Image 1 (tube, rainbow over the protein chains, first blue to last red):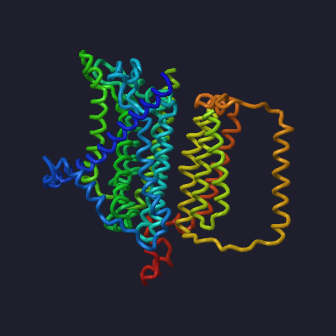
Image 2: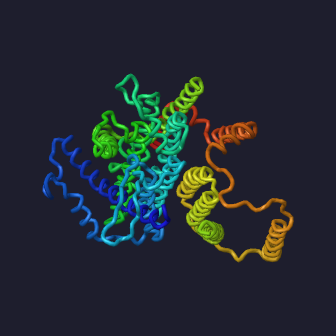
Image 3: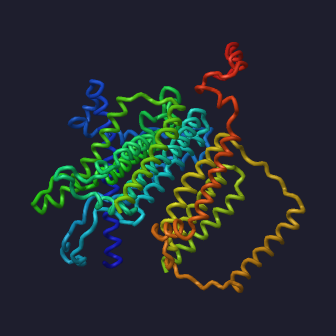
Length: 357
Length: 190
């Protein structure tokens, strides 16, 4: 593949993935409003478009046209930089996530355009051999957006929210990272593609060989709980606890800057759901295999999307079911329950793998 | 060629961040400059082919340790530093000292170094190579370091914990006799 072809393909893939991610972010807000409404026996958005489907668009336009207030007491450079940091790191982390298998695109030639030859590509922007570490690194940088927003707003609610967010994200990142080690030991690789490929096949002809059914059930639940805390979702939404802190770290933000924090939160949710799918639910592997070549090409992506959708639904479901933790309970749970469990899972997995080898 | 240009670029960013760290008068800005230094160092490792070290550099230093720095600065609500002109002794001895030290280091590196040049990306830096080094060749130093860190953690816990905090059954519940009296008259912490 020549360098020009490579650059063109990369740009197309990046644009497609970012477009899909931002659409997914907009529609997870719609999903959240709709599901929460039905949980509370309401209708939710119904006015804009059929089933309120155009509501995200209307919200976006509203955010753009709202007045962008900048309070006189803020520290301006960081106040402006904070939402940018949050949204940039939230969106970048999707870059190494594989959505499906190799696809053959075939020969594309329109009129007298240059002939790129026949080519195929993985459904992934780039495959790196330390993919998982890159995702962890980028998401760990995302905490600066929240912390700096809280500090630079120069207001007590924002500062408390920022402090809580950074302490909480640091604490739960430990158990989140450790819960993934079991999966890494099983796959023997840090590449997300290799981890998914290691989960193909079935036990006893019907149970898929996904990690969640393959000895990593405990790790899956540790990951899920830590991921909820990492994304500041209920029952871990103390950084923006409405009843105590107004809106936490983004109290002083309005218009598009507020929307950027909102986008960052939902983009992080999508990334976390993707990682959970790839590491524990077998990625694009599905229980049914079709013979038709077109279905064979499409079904992996469909399975992947269905699994991610399941996690997004679970987020909303949990949010409207569980009450919020108290702060000392949150810290005690993270350090005294999740961390020892994650360590025990590593020791257990390592022993089993070593015994089998 | 592109790799060399990027390497020089990130090296320049790294040095600029380090200088900015010293020049800035506000602790938050200094901490942010240090994050820039860490991140550009990670980029340098990546360009040298040590992708695992680069990722760990970002996760551990830029993502975790610097966040703790920021939390501390935010908690203390540290304000701007006061600028002084600096002492005359520092100017008279410091500047020539830095110049002499820099020249010595440069001269040693250029003339006295036995090491040959290494091509960019020539050294294996994948997780397997590093794991082999850590768990085969340097196993003893690695384990001794971990014990050392454990001792440091225990020391920090002992220093940070107040005796009455250990005796207290639940947070918020007054433990000692005096505290109960203070709470009764409405002066204790709730």
